[in-house]
Image (cartoon, rainbow, N blue to C red; front, side, top):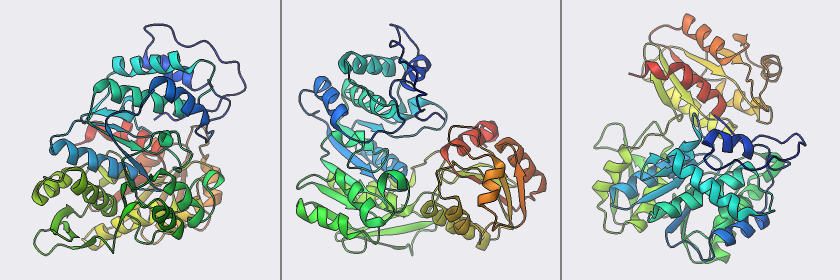
Length: 435
């Protein structure tokens, strides 16, 4: 997986020549701006207006939130395609290949289409300095426009109000969950973070908030802009299904829709389906439910081998870890034996909070060093996870995974988690063994 890299104060080389590869473009994007993250819309807006003198004609759906954004985007994508709409989706970060960030009608963008979009942004950029993420976001917009799709589903990268994705005025929006993450950029409490997330809302739009306890800042912004905001617990409910095993019922004023109980965050799936009832007014509830049951998201509680089960999950903050712990506890209650964790993390994440959330369900820990920018070495990770017992330190994810598999019995579960980088490396090691 590749994320934005920090420039080391080097002079910026000239842009790639005609016919350059995707990798050559990405290497260049990593050094074109002094900082990795530079929140604000002014620079992006200048280039956007050059690329799009008028707003794109497609319906634009923006998704923000602390966790569950990828699930919401994937569910909306599946529902809209099943409903006969052409779709484009933009997500970040990616796991194995940058092309995963832009999907056209459910398929990763081709190298040629991606390079063409990069070239268009560079031609429009002039002297404006853009970060890796900003450049890629504008390129995604160009690619979606070139494809002529009817619906754009855009995942916010960080926050909402000042994120590059928010440079476009959305027609519809989803706010998934609101919790503490990216404290240095978004603040250290839910009210402040909620204000940032709610920055994607636009006047009189229809939006859904999946958080069961939304901060007042979200509700206040929605009211001020006269947003038709659908709230879980008020406008729709979730309850265990009495008629379908492994299902949850989404209860709406006009009826029920059967949704999958796992492996994805049900709140995010439900929010996407609620919005789809507006986006696809003629779709039957059965059709929406069937499409929702078919959604899969790589890296989100994804099982990659059996006996023992090896599951990977990109959860990297305490809120995501609590969800993950609940899923793992469900496996134990269903007859599973031990849970063995392989954990590697970035230095700027709340390791202590993640460990506290997972500690009650994990029986043995294999902590691994993460050899990427901002990655924690194993000794630093061990120091921050000092409250744990039955802990084994390993220099790499490969070493940790191998050690965990050696002690695991067929009924055990190995969970590999901690970041997109962690899951990407584990998938590289395990993907050939997917049944």
